[in-house]
Length: 268
Image 1: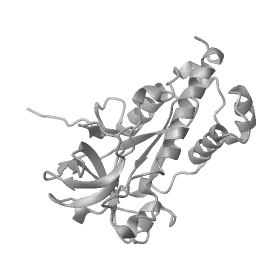
Image 2: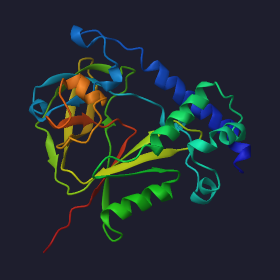
Image 3: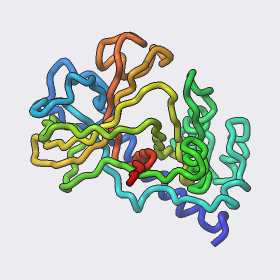
Image 4: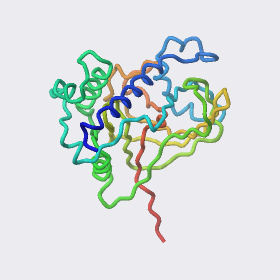
């Protein structure tokens, strides 16, 4: 099916994604500490290494979306035929038949803006417009001959709760890796993966979590050990009450994030 004939399906997918983003501002604050009720719940994924211990309880936001409703991934040839730049936004809105002031147009503009922000010092990044270009970035980071593992946060139970207290049920499991690539899906009419890798030290963990309502989550967490080049406006600094460079910052990956690490090598 040609791209023009699939625009309606893409439109429905993006509408669903935008609706999910808007609905995430509506959350159940029952049993969440009162001093956190004024914060955007989507920022409540940040913590520090001292919090990574069995029995620790913290409020965490995990968005939950139907994977079948995500925008479809286009083949590289098809994706490469479509402009992907902020200066081409008027053409793109016309191409996808979106009005200039629609939520869909705002979502596209936000994604294009985010993708054109220069990387911070020690970071490499890409907004991959196809699965092939995402894998090219991973291979370019690790080396063409390097095999890799794919990690993601997994929900072991089903519920609609997106924000609640979670308790660490087991000793967090360190995942030693010299490099890491994290990819996040972005709101757009077709699948866009914002992928980035940092040369500074990161520590990865597998964390078993239990929610107040009985939810079970096998989460992937990362601690960024150097935050000195991060923007002062980064949400983590507001949540943790710290300054850039004064502390490491840890966070949980959402279930629709993809984390790549080099596969361990074994020697006889």
